Length: 538
Image 1 (cartoon, rainbow, N blue to C red):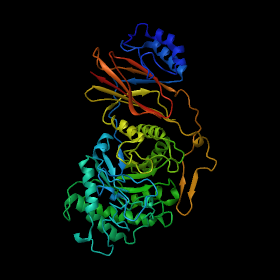
Image 2 (image 1 turned 180 degrees about the vertical axis):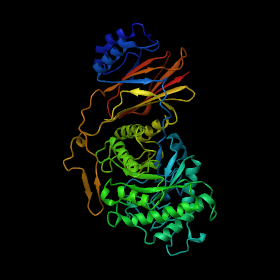
Image 3 (image 1 turned 90 degrees about the horizontal axis):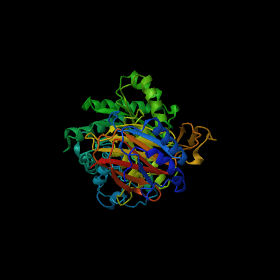
């Protein structure tokens, strides 16, 4: 059914009461959509006012999308921690003699290459690859690359490359870039110590790291020529290293490793310090940058981690802006900023649809933050089921990935409270995607924090938290989307709607065809939920 512009908005007014009684259910579909006012050459002032009235009467968000605009290419921030191919295919992803005490990523040892492609993943960080310690340089995990710390680092026989070789090859085959983390992995998921004490011999560690670079980029020790660009120096030193020791120890470690890596190839990108506490007292913010600057050391990227204690996606943007300002202040304006561990609060277990909305809102909001790379940490709040299928959060992640490299369109109606809108048009103009995420911060996490912004984990670290917010949610019971500037003229196009909520997981809930340069689409969409609207020329 198609309704032309003439008289359409009078009909909309006449339907208002009926729509309210039906909870937003349009007359065109039992799935709750109103596809109306398609065609015509412009809504005009009276039409826009009518649309605003209609949205307000329903408690919906008025959203506009200009399909003829172009704000540049939508950036891909589809990075993850966790490899597409494990070190061993099968159940060996759980070390012998251990029992899982928390989520383990890919415990069945599945080849996830196809699902990684589905999710648009193109950047994989090699931290916490598995519970066997694959990718670790030293430590005590069974898959560590250099098992005997007293051995000669120039002798290929002293290296255990095979498990990590398998993982890196899988990342490369999945068409993802490798972000190599030179550190140790977390083993707490199988009840073992965290394996995080600092190395005892920095010079030896740097020598081993150099040979690892040569192995993967220059064929040393029957190696490869992958051209891996990113090399990160340690993981979260403010959790057990600089919180217990002088930060100058980490500075010296960084100096030796960055020098060793650059001696192989000065074009490689090195960085750190992977801070997680946001606490200046651990010396990994201004003092670290001052040391880098004073010693003329490279810092190609600055990496930080965050899991919002109070489940506010705005935390990522607040912290990114703070770190960007800090980097610029010390003259590192060209240094990339990486948020290479993020997810929901580590202390909460959200409903699947809540996590999905959080993921979609977070990734959408990052488009406007000074974040060059992001990597979702999958183990704590999974994107994948143990059988390799997507969770609802994984489906949301994939939906955002589907917009990557599209031309970003001008939109209105989004806010910084959790209601996000991201729209894109394909390069060949055959498709327009509109992703709406309706997320609400849990009520218990709103308002000033009674305990203040300092949170201590005794014996480990103290975190400095962003301010909690006081928010009154309104006009988020659904959406009233006005799409203008569609490029297809009188040609027919399809309108398909996919939803994530308590009952759906990116389920196709409505599909129809229409034509015209404009389209109005309206439906109930209470939080937490995600909706993907795809308009496609037919």
